[in-house]
Length: 365
Ligand SMILES: Cc1ncc(C[n+]2csc(CCOP(=O)(O)OP(=O)(O)O)c2C)c(N)n1
Ligand SMILES: [Mg+2]
Image 1: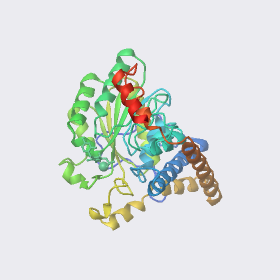
Image 2 (image 1 turned 90 degrees about the vertical axis):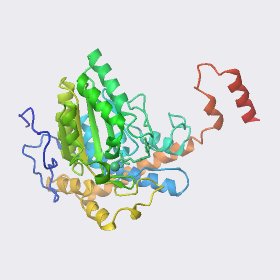
Image 3 (image 1 turned 120 degrees about the vertical axis):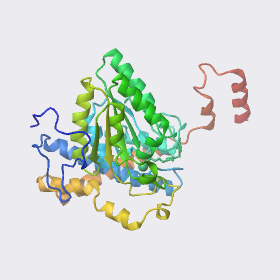
Image 4 (image 1 turned 30 degrees about the vertical axis):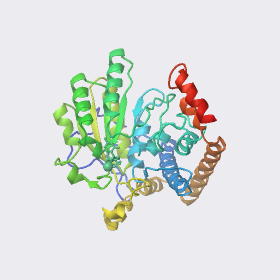
């Protein structure tokens, strides 16, 4: 059991990691997660990976216009999702958060319908693919302008504080987002107001083709927390348990009114920036291959095997089950049919104004 109320120290020199590359538990405390919880994390890692692969296939088939691949980010994202309270806390995610959204409860059919813009998309086809949101699940709809959602997360958190709801807001974003003015204004305001918000940076070392060293002169993103009066942690984001345990402690701290925290997870995107990018033009293949050997799914699988909780049969069974579920969700999303173009006139004003009514008629004619 964890007894110390603060296990992890902020502004750590080495990224916090709990599982070794071989899958050995290296944490300075005893695991307190039962086998079902551990298997549940692995399930969510696999769902995220297989959804990512499926979205890219659908893009190549011409059924999805754009994809932001997320493979390599799953460990950080699933750890975060499992540390949050679903239905209570708020997420302000970004476009690469496939595993985070699914592990936080976003139905697979909604993600697929949003990507394909069919009638089963609750956002009615009004966003680019990879830009989900959910009113039911407290997921702020993803916005394309980098870092534009970080200050709204702080605003929501201040409102939670004023109303004493005990909720926590989490804004996730890439390291490239930290070069935007919005990021700095948001952290400054959160620090000054003691807002119950966590800033969750998924540092994959590239903002499209711009590498980390062209993004900032700072040794780490976490170091920036110091200037805004909050703790900053650097975490090995390829280690789902490191992400989970750090986030569990951080979220508890934030929920207890101790103010905001910045967490930097070190991850890597295995694929290109998007379906419109050719990453071989700006990063060596050997670098990608080296990071793939640190795959968060492989590492956690090795861990489960060492714990006696996993084997080849369990792996085959899980993959078949997840594929079947994704296949059914894809069929359901497609069967809903494409969104009619005239839907664009709905929900703009409480009542449709005469000139819009006229334009709608012209379009339908
Ligand atoms: C304000 C703004 N500037 C530029 C862009 C174009 N753009 C889209 S994604 C991206 C890179 C973001 O990198 P990062 O924050 O590291 O996230 P990653 O894609 O690496 O996960 C850029 C520059 C944008 N969407 N918004
Ligand atoms: Mg990046």
